[in-house]
Length: 110
DNA sequence: CCCCTGACGTAAC
DNA sequence: GGTTACGCCAGGG
Image (tube, rainbow, N blue to C red; front, top):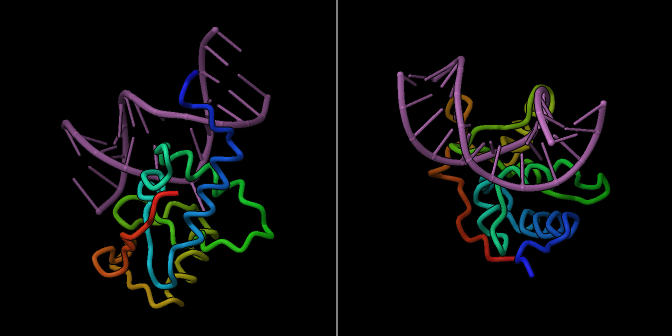
């Protein structure tokens, strides 16, 4: 038996579960979420899971950033994400979030 | 089966 | 700091 038997939708649910626990005003990276999942998945899969998140599910998707605190979403969505973050008091320096101030490092395993 | 495209990350230039 | 290249993994054509 291979250890990679997790069904994709199951993985997605785990990702959503982890993301749901990011507090207001705090942020994490795709890599952080990927590492919090057990067994760990690739950062791409995190992006994949968030992309296919149901609209009805209230998820703080805007608190997930690319490495270095950069916004990964292109165009309009990216601007919206930035707006949400600034509303929560998250500080930027150029195009990047001040990870030294807002990074949430207590993501428990899920 | 091959190729391309993503809400990624790291390294190299 | 912008660009390229490559590894990574799921989906689609």
